[in-house]
Length: 430
Image (cartoon, rainbow, N blue to C red; front, side):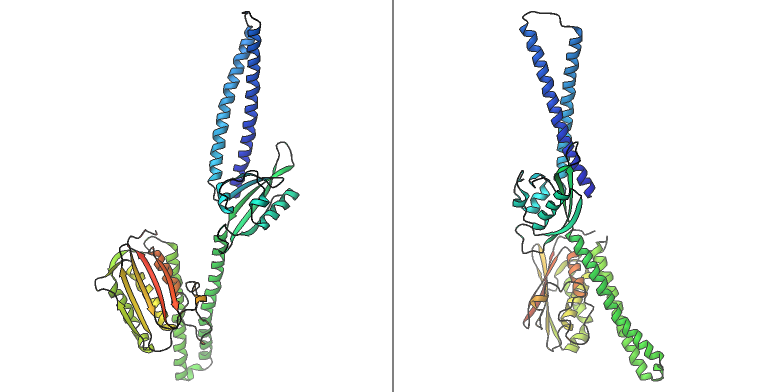
């Protein structure tokens, strides 16, 4: 909900409160007048005919009292409605007086600052543990101008987590019938996810541009060599063409991987076709496709999978998951004798698939980043980068598209394991 709607709701609440107070005061004065008239009539001690004009006036007063009660009921209902709407806002809404005492707050504000109950009339300086916000409120009170800014805020009890980014909109609230103000309203909007997404987009564009530019530069360089009498030397020309072909395939692989990630993240209808299928043939087919790399690295494998074991999922994407994990193990381990183990355990509520190797492992400092796009462990090792840096990112998104989770456990030089837990009953991501 936009800030404008939030501000409008707050102003309506204040106007309704003022209107309610005025109506209640009028009712009290009218009731008092009627009581005085009734007492005066009794004290006379005699029955006398009341003038018709007075009777008509009394009837009008009773009618006004009835209408006032009706209006008051409407005011109460509208006040309750607006209060419920403000309480339901995800944005934190607060109103402070000139001394920065809390005059109004909603549930989201209580959650944001860790208040178990509304600290009405309490000082913001004592209740809000955020010096940047307090300073901004004091500045707004002094200048009496509408202003906005961004601040960081640690959620209560989660001080070790990265701070949230809050967009703060502060404006003075004028007193009734006056241009001066002794109150301010504050709306706090959490924009952390938006900022993170913006950063992801910027990083993705920068990394994708770099990854595509490198092979294109190499291809263009060899084309220039061919143009400069490179065709005269047939052996050199064939070598140039082989290199260009290699980097052309690299570009195609990067584009294909980016399209796969985009499709998985879009949750488009029909992306995941969940059906029960035998897992052993799927794993064996991936091993067969990577056999040349196994032979080159002199690596071996173990399949700990029952012949009839099945899982619920999309066989196409599981082929990609296993291919990327196994290929990653082979490419990151140059030493001979690597052993890769693929295992499936069927449990009551979930299936657990693990892919392990006994290679060099992943440093603890890198484990939280390995599923990010274009990230490579120990990128300075060797003159040639291995892979596109998108394989593990595809793995994570494909597993999550099946409603599962993936985690990595690694002891460098001993064992590295990627463990995936897939529920037997998967919710649709369409």
